[in-house]
Length: 54
Image (cartoon, rainbow, N blue to C red; front, side, top):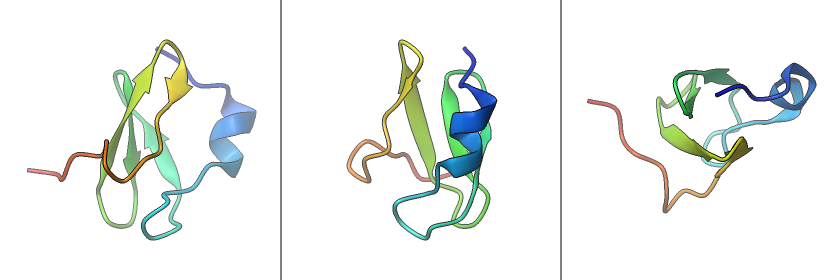
C-alpha cells in the first residue's frame, strides 16, 4: 500500500504534529509513535483510530 509521496510530505500526526513514515498499510508518527491505518490508499488520521506502539 503506497501513499503519494507528495501527500506524505504535508501530512502530520494530529496528536503531536510530527512527520509520518509509511509502513505496511499504516503510517507511523516519528514523534509520539502512534500508528494510523491506511484503508484503500486513504490515511485515516483520527486519534480514535490510532494504535499505541508496543
